[in-house]
Length: 274
Length: 301
Image (tube, rainbow over all chains, first blue to last red; front, side, top):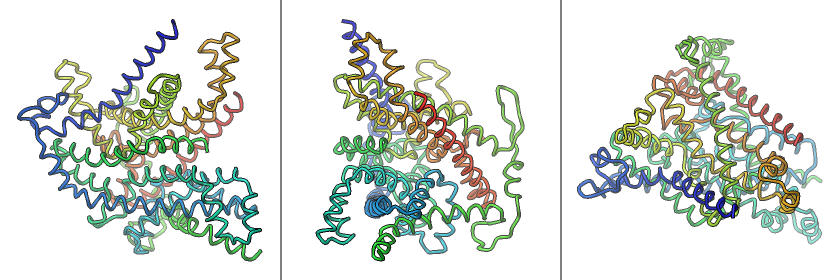
């Protein structure tokens, strides 16, 4: 009896919290369909009558240059994540399997660098990359590879330690060279942690603002957060456009999450235990 | 033997080269640059000793109220104190919420999976977009509710230091609680059921189980959770820029934004980099201290 009542209370708390968590999204959605006056009159109400305005989206979509920004974000995120998965798993594998002082030193350096905040290196980084003519999309991908290496290698390193050696030894006896052992035997075994590494890197790179802000100087290369920053600066007093823009930028992530939530939640969980 | 050395180099090189160029070299050249009159362009700046560090601690003095006592101090110290206060409050709240949510969704409720998915959503969205979104809620929606129901407290959010501070805390808590929840769920689910069954046989109540089973076995997850929240709140930039932009009167400016503005707005790269080095030292010292303290606690349990 008592546990039954507890259950109802807990369920009630859960629902209230869920609504509280979702309420900001509700507010953005309803207000993004209103005219400026509609927002001014009532921020809580559903869009109604003369205050309903569907044009906000068309205008925001157009002025954001959303398609272009989406394509840029997608290209940079996918290529960077792909390279991080490939190179970090390769590096972590030989770092685990080679038991020498330098392989230890290299791993410890990657791990220790987790403590370095981006803001401590951003000024010399931008000047160095500028001199190398690397302030462009390939340069940004290179920088994501550098910044993402630490966490990706740590995660792979932890996982590979629990992968038994026997399979690799058998493959070597069968005459595989190191690249074949890695690509045929090892990499497929790493799938669970590859999911985690991919998800964490995609979430980070897709949403990153400061690095593109410092390194992208051509509007046609701008990623979604960067475009949103300029768009918001222009329309911050015109909330009906700004909110429509915000929703457009959030939509791809929400849709992706809707389909991949199981993998995402599991992946993040894996990453935390490591 | 020779081929294995060669393949070692080939396998490690791509990550290592990018990492050295992007993280390690800038870290060290940044430390060197902090002792020069670097302007961001000149490749051969002059050595100026500790001048940039002195400037960081003496220039731009502001008056702030601490426990209603007005104090004059350099803005950078003030920025550090604001960031530290923000981090302290955020770390406590985010981990408490995250742990509470994890307890809630692991209690065997129907639909816990849906709840779990909902609580995690804010994490997927970038800090910049969340900052803009909440700016609307604090300035427009809060104001509107305050006007309709006559609640003075809800009016004028983000226009004072206190509401800016709590605004930032609310945004980061809303964003990160779900992430911490996932970490704590993983830890709670790892506890063997047999322990709870044994405890039930011994007639243990909820608090006994909490104190003697859950807490000790989740201690390791707390180390991770505290580390992530502490370093994220100390390094906060996007939300700070998008929500308050450091205002009113720069009173909610945090360390990362201050470094950025010193370099790009004040055009003082030397001083900006000196602050960046201090930032590096502070962040590593604080997170390392936390890690070793938490690790010690883990063993105690």
